[in-house]
Image 1 (cartoon, rainbow, N blue to C red):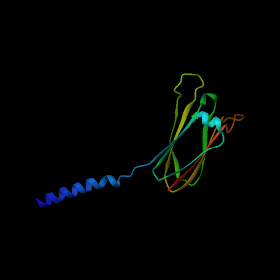
Image 2 (cartoon, rainbow, N blue to C red):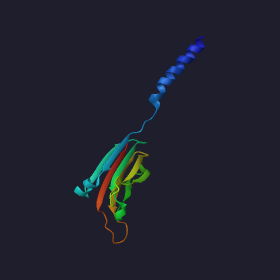
Image 3 (cartoon, helix red, strand yellow):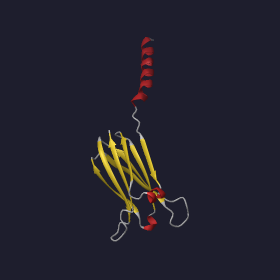
Image 4 (spheres, helix red, strand yellow):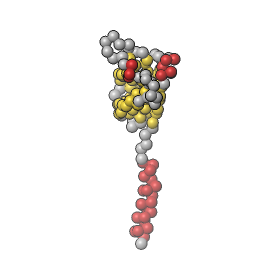
Length: 140
């Protein structure tokens, strides 16, 4: 009987202690509209500090029907990786309405990464650096 009681109490103690061992990730979201870029086309910048396993979600106004799209280059430490990318169609049926390009970046090791994002037309003679967005992500 005592063995069953001790086993039961040990089970209860472990069950209560287990949730404190679960690692949860932090999510950081940033969304920038077309109007915000029009007001400040080359000065948009953010800095984030996250942990390993944490994610930064970036949503930027985009209208690929005009030939414009976002591209980026990552520099600095290999502390961040692109986990996901998607394009969300515009809510409006109006021709030429902007949608949203979405990225998920994840902290994978300690360090600092810089991401330079440029909105432009990628072909020769196309408009370059119409809008610029810079991110610095420090992973602690």
